[in-house]
Image (tube, rainbow, N blue to C red; front, top):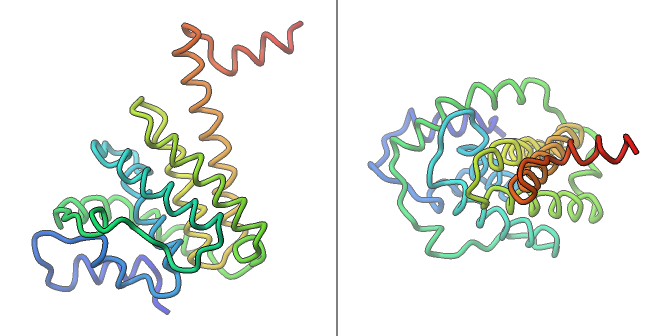
Length: 207
């Protein structure tokens, strides 16, 4: 099976496409990797260090829906038809991929099947699903700083799923934990007038 980066490059840059594409079109590339593939595609725009206005919230909703299905043990994901068939400009998708494919290739260079139970066991998939669901909620929050790191965690974790690489998925889960800490700190700073999570921890340790 071809690498994900190769398939995406062929589909969006080498073959002739209409001016707009849909998620349903992109799913033709997924084959049996459909859950991980969908999560990679949906988290990519927000995971990049470039502005992605208007995508974090709707894609966060979709990622949350997929994560819940992972937790419940679904084999084939269900996506609302309205979102599945919503047109996206080809130029927009190509812009995200130009920025994201180099990073994807770097991860692919070290990816290989290992620690497979993390990706395939019931406990592993439930744990991954729960963490991704929490990061998806963070992506939905319209506050700067609550989108990028959680999306990066989802991206790396999901890529591990596509490659059956539990080590990479574990690395993604670490990013998810970091993203959760960052989001919690930002929300606490907003609620308690500037006191971040780190400030609270320092205060507690100083007692």
